[in-house]
Structures are given as C-alpha cells and as structure tokens.
Length: 408
Image (cartoon, rainbow, N blue to C red; front, side, top):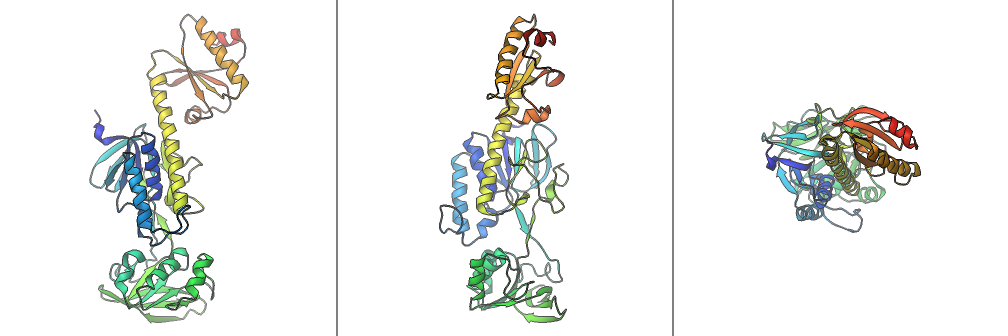
C-alpha cells in the first residue's frame, strides 16, 4: 500500500516564480500540493536586486517579491521540500519522482518549473577559477570585489543591469561586447544608463579567450580577442562575471519520455501541457518568447488550473467508468450544441427501454478535453460503449430512437 505521506495530488518541481505561482493555485484549489526545490526558494529572481516591471509593483527587490509568493503558497497549505529531483517515472496514472536524498513521491499531476542556469563558455580558466574570481551572480558576489577591477562578459539585460550593480562596489567595470561600438542587446533605458556610467567601460567587437589566475586561488587577468582583427590582448582584473545566456535545468528529464528541443527546452500548448498526459512545464524551462517574472507567474497559474481540471476529470473517469459494474455509454457533448442536447435526452430514453441498461457518463467538451484526446474524439456528439474503460464500439449518433436502440 502506498505511503499516504508520500502521495500528493500535485507535485511542483522548482521554486521560482513559476513554480510558486503553480503551488499557490494548486493549494487554493484544495489540491494536496508538494513543491520540491533544490536551492533557495525564489530561483534566479531571489538574486535580483531590483524589479521595476512586475505589474502593480513599482519597485521591489527579488527576495522581497519572492517572500510574498512563498507566504501566499504557505497560506494555502503547500508543503515545501528542499531536495533535488534526479529521476522521474511519468508512464502511469500516478507520476513518480525520486530525489537525490532517495525519497520517492507520487502525484496525479506534475508541473515542471525547474528554470534555467547560467551558460558556461568553457574557456580555459573558467571552471578552474569558479568561486575564486569567476562568478555568475552579481547580487551574490559583487560585494567581494570592493575597490577592484571587474570584467563582465555579455551585453543583454542581465549583463548590463548586473554590471551596473557590480559598479556600486568595484573600482571599474569593463564590459566585453561582441557588437560594434554603441550596440548593446539590452533594453534602451539600461543601455543609456550604462553607456554614461562613470565607472563602466566597454570593449567592442570582442570576446574572451581565457581567464588567467594565480593557480586556482584568484583571477589576475583575462585574454580578450578582437573578432574583427583577430588580435588578442591581456587585461588585468580581479573578477570576471559571465552573463552569456542561460540553459534549461532539464537534464534530469532526459530519460522521462518528455519531448524537448535540442537545447533541452520543453514545448507545451496553451494549457502548459507537455506530450505526456498529466505533466506540465512552466517558466524558463519551457519554449517561450518572454522570460520574465510576470510570464512565469502566468505560466504557473495556467498549468495549475489545467492540472486541477485534469485531476478532476481523471478522478471522475476512475469512479464512474473504470470502477463501474455496468458497461458505460460515454457521451461527448457540447452544451451549446442542439444536436448534443437532443441526443443526450434520446440516449437516456433508449437506455430505460433496454432489458439490461448501461451507465451513462456525459463529458462536456467545453471543460473536459483530456478524455476526448484519449479516445480521439473529433466531433460532438459522440458516443462510445466501454467496458472498464476499453472501447467496445462507437455508436452512430442518429436522432432516431429505433436506430440508436438497434446498436445496443
């Protein structure tokens, strides 16, 4: 018998804004919800110094905003676990996840909100000097470079905004940019502020080839290559911050059967559904146009509502179809379709006339679409004759009592 303490309605993997939003909606829907997160709750947002584009909040720090998300989830009874999911089994009705601490949990639905992580350039010296001058998070590490010279790699929003934060502590911040002079990949407001910042300098048309250090103890310089001339130069510094993009944290899903693109991002539909029934993906680990707190929160809400309806549909199916002592007439209908309504009434009438009648289960296609996909229903009304969930036959939906009755 399954340990009830390890069994949940909904498991959320990841505790960033997408995962926390999903947990809030799951808890509010009275789903027994477990959120598993391997690091600090809040994800990358928890390391963000300032957020000025979350609707209704003019200016807030990442940690403060995430603290409110966490409190909100706690208020709805969400269970939190600090651990790392290392493997999954999504092949059955109850989805299973196993953690690094060798704990196993199951749920009726799973939402993947594992986020992403900094991309490595894998140049000489980068890995060797991580934590000794090489860094990927300004909020975490900028204060360690008080009064020193720092190099930042990248020119997107993260690189420029984090670079300005580093400049609060460093003597000088040098930004290495691939593009021609004056061209940055960040938003215009940040670009204007950075280009006029007295402590920030830019090296254009360039990339970094190597991080030089004193053994593995500290950074002392970087080798910079001009991509137009091919010339390499050495620049002395004490710190190097890499902001060259992110990669999805989905390696633990490689054997799950979940569809992913070549980079590891998960494709979903508008309900955040993956290719596996009952499994959803939200936030930065899914294929999407905009990766922001507001879109992550939206993803989480959408997935949790979709999961709630999926669970309700599955529970009804198990109770009314799989556990039925009678064979079942499964009617797929649309409440706004006149033919559906007429057939529904006629089916009830026919069933009363049968010597051994059936159990009639009605599925409204407007709200319950998972079973329609399961049985490949393409139009309404449609009627299936089932025995313990197995399809025996499909009825021709005549609006004629005798013709309908003759098929039963």
